[in-house]
Length: 172
Image (cartoon, rainbow, N blue to C red; front, side, top):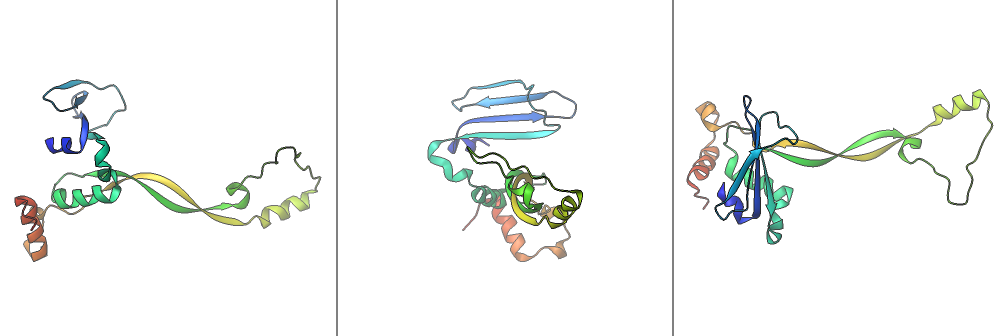
């Protein structure tokens, strides 16, 4: 845990147990810290760790780097480790939803007098358009079940090797 200070100036840990209040622990290293009740956004249960990164350690805020580190050091942890990631999906919308037409400056909106039949034709003619929508979601990074909970017959020699390396820190 204290290795967090290799990349961060300040660490904030918010924690909540089912039968207790939510607390926040803050420290900027140097041997001092504060603990106080947290009345912010409730966690429900669990721990949230926020690292205030040092300016020269920005490579560690890249999604790819975080996933690589968690896979290397925490893939056999029995508790879920989640990362809030931004994803994209295609969404189908009608043309008028995708780009609402607004009158240009100095131009007045057009007013057309059309009958009911023309309106019915227009709604049928509306074309669908695919747009890319960005959203965020929690992605579980350590989906591998801990090796000791699996049948020995289901574990490859490579997995045993990775587990040994993760236990002994023998990465060479």
